[in-house]
Image 1 (spheres, rainbow, N blue to C red):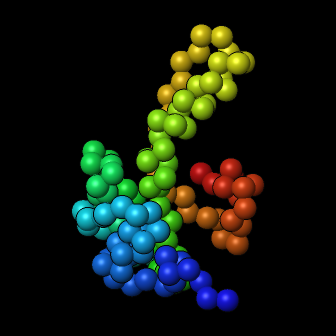
Image 2 (tube, one colour):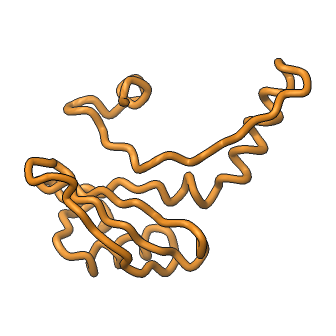
Length: 122
């Protein structure tokens, strides 16, 4: 079975931007990139999105497989997620104040990409 276009191996920044635009229906512009270190498994790419003018979207591209991971949805849905968490926490903790900050793009543990692996990831 053919993998969706946004999961295929991508080499250039332009193709990564195109894949994210196809995946999310937003317009992205390149801001910066880094490999973090020579031995890093991921290339880190920072983009700006039209729907998120004051935020930076982090994209991690696996250097060996080309798979992409990003934090776009966490940033885009920040207010909705915070409201849901606030309603849930208020049922348990009366008068609580909750702050939700979307994190960086998640990098899966080697060979472990289910929810348990995500929760163990630093």
